[in-house]
Image (cartoon, rainbow, N blue to C red; front, side):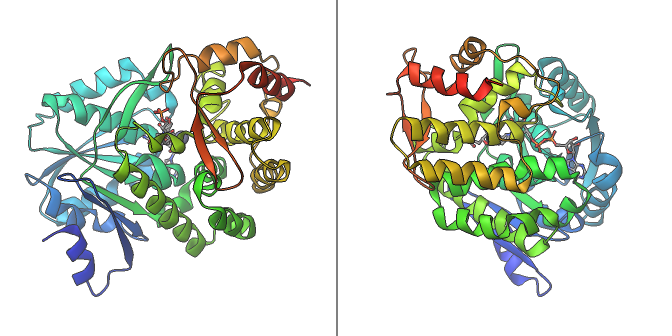
Length: 383
Ligand SMILES: NC(=O)c1ccc[n+]([C@@H]2O[C@H](COP(=O)([O-])OP(=O)(O)OC[C@H]3O[C@@H](n4cnc5c(N)ncnc54)[C@H](O)[C@@H]3O)[C@@H](O)[C@H]2O)c1
Ligand SMILES: O=C(O)C(=O)C[C@@H](O)[C@H](O)[C@H](O)COP(=O)(O)O
Ligand SMILES: [Zn+2]
């Protein structure tokens, strides 16, 4: 029985199922409240042995680990758990090594499945561990942040940061299943919810003007706690990401659109040390404002659309300028460009940019005048 038919056959099922259509490696994304308590039953069809190892972090463990462990055990599935320190600092080589050793200590086998229970950090780290342990084992994503539910749990990008930059070591390794329990967002701090909202807005800004207009009308109530609106946003976002990933799994083309705001955002994250000063989603929000500003400066995008992008992100409560990053007084155009020059999308020495012809009309280009980028960055960091 597949996960899809499981959902359909359960009279009590109150979740939506989307699928990521990758030949031979297709998987379902299930979205709804209460999925943590059903994780065991929903995972069974994709497990290759009745044993999982759950990887989670020190914030999520006390809140949600017991529910997931009990759910697996109730479904007759043996569990062990590994808890790593919360935060972006866990996407590092030394933490990866410690995790790999813990998993090997737990006597992992080739048919054992890892379960990533947490935000994007846990998903990226656990997914990478799954990609390289015993030369590749299965994993399931149970995303617990808005960011992870709308973005990082889908699509198979896994990896860690290095001193050279963001996500520079990793692998494409698709999960077998994604269980997005929108109920767990209730325990998520507002700052983290907002960071995830930036990636939600990204889907509107890059390819769906209608969704962006919906967010302009509903974003504030979504952030305030409206469950239906959160669920709708998770569904639309996952559907958009699944479609892009299905047509360009390894980012040889279109998938780079999902990097809107990231070339700038990753540079801002690197400059602030990949930590609490600026979260990934927060950096992406500022990066998307920069991408729209640059597009407008280059005459590619109506100025009004750049204003709309900035206004909406600011109105929901996100910072929209590097100058608003508390604790960070001095920015340098050269340093930001230095980080951008190490981006994974650099080709033949040229930085790839995701720009826009308007809201919902992003495109990929290497044909950008560096002086225009310098001017935009200089304006954005001037006090
Ligand atoms: N692989 C991808 O496609 C992809 C996409 C987007 C982002 N990312 C990566 O994801 C990471 C950011 O993910 P994130 O924003 O989820 O950060 P995160 O994983 O650090 O989680 C944010 C914080 O929320 C806590 N938390 C998680 N769930 C909670 C819950 N339900 N209740 C209370 N606290 C909870 C965590 O412990 C952490 O402190 C970055 O490293 C980014 O590069 C990857
Ligand atoms: O899935 C993708 O593709 C994305 O670009 C999603 C991004 O939100 C995510 O932050 C991703 O990790 C960035 O891609 P990277 O290849 O620059 O690491
Ligand atoms: Zn991102």
